[in-house]
Length: 226
Image 1 (cartoon, rainbow, N blue to C red):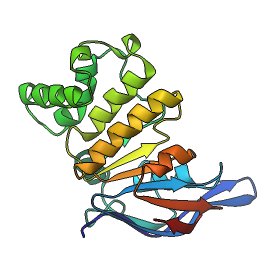
Image 2 (cartoon, rainbow, N blue to C red):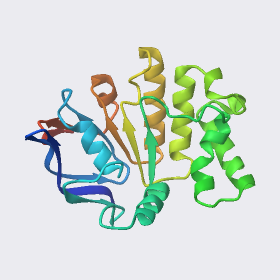
Image 3 (tube, rainbow, N blue to C red):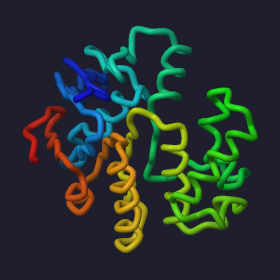
């Protein structure tokens, strides 16, 4: 199997006054292409910090992250931006949609950033909107959509450019149980088509939908459950 994303000897230290906080401590992790991996653990265990490192949002104090075999750190900012833009998709708890844009305009952003012609970007964005069941809401702005619909727009935005890995930070955290189930069904369908997903969550229901569970505590990986 092909490795989609891996980290080796990953550390993240924060200075808080006279104290050094070890948020992530020597983590080694390998995610294979086509997996859907849940990262779980109690609040403050380091799982969100780890996701920020794996996604390139934050830089490690030591160690490396490789995406499709290419290093995420130790390269120029432009190279990292290009790598993240092409190989990664992101789904957040708070959606992070641009309020002044329509749904389809939000979805086509990753394509336009890669230099794809606007007419082609619109076609692909509409296909993505239809695949998440929102083809009839393409012209609606985020404020005109429910929370579940906004999250589906953000999911379409995350996979429209066919990234190697999609990173999800509590993707159902702001949703009710019924909508959460719909969102996880959609993510499972995306995974079944070959997409690789990493999902940070505290929710057992979400973890049960994943193919592998990674448990964290005190900045370290404890064990894994198949």
